[in-house]
Image (cartoon, rainbow over all chains, first blue to last red; front, side, top):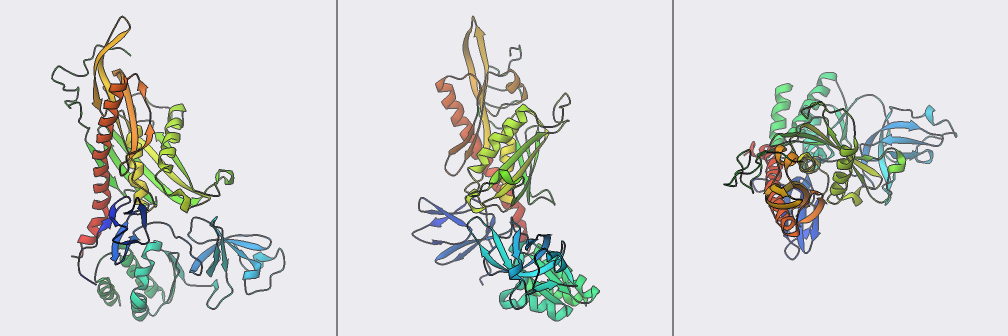
Length: 222
Length: 253
């Protein structure tokens, strides 16, 4: 990566002509001109021009693995809060247990955390999630923290470099949900170190050489 | 309303020493609140406004939801201590009207189609009022929406123009000056006030209200002045947002 300053762009900022670039994520086209539509960092990846968001809500995408909290148990389904603008529906046919009608509360109740996958998102943004897959389950034990969903790629790092670094130094089990919720399990002290490191990543998510900084912090803590 | 105050002198200087096309001092700061998704603090002359944005989140009560798009709920509220005499707290006719026109103006720039069934709440709190609070509120709301990371076509901006210093003789109005950004006395004792809000990239008008009387020529002149004012304030909005986040980048160089 070249070491040039990353440019902050704001909505309605002019980014280029459609004849020159292709409008990527976070951009909009008006009369053949490309403008930013969100506050973010400019990322020119010829021929694409993208804006990587700095802030904002989680936008659910089919197939994402996420961490949710059960909000409500209904007769044949549950509603879960997945940090999106809308609650997600988990139907009894999408859990690995055989649930009798009206007995949903025996399996999952308000406040329970689940590792789930987004099954579908329709045009009305009605969300369905599932627990029927490998590595999907009801979470027991550990800690869950929430970060901005836009910071998730930085916490994972290139090919998982950042998260592997965290795991190596803290010996914690960590899982990062696409919706910005992070599950951490390990020794109490190590968990608090991990949280500190993650907060550092969150604060300085757009700076260069972040991996080295995090490594330094983790070394000083252990 | 009639008074003996001379709002504008022979040299074209106004009560607070401004010329006819001069704005009051505007100061904008983005991201001032911790709990809100986006926020902005704005000072415009003697006006002090804080805006907090929440969302998009599911609209409640359910019947307010629109299955095709998000709704923008702006709530304009004046603090009890924002005016000379204590203002009775809570929404009144005036603040409900302003909430409505600001909501409609913001819906035109936010990409509401992306969030069906959702609501975006914009809370505008006027802490100190000195004429032109609706423009100040809308301007701050634009910055707070961008700060919340909400996709939008443009950052809306508001500004007012008006007419002061006209004389009335035997029912005939004569004279008067078209000026930019009315102050408190000018608003109270002036002849007309024309607040507008625009989308500065396209010059589309998002809000246009008028209080008082203007001839067609005066109206056109006031519109041009207000447009120019909007573009000036728009620059300050951009600077506020970029300054807030650019510091994160510079730290590492």
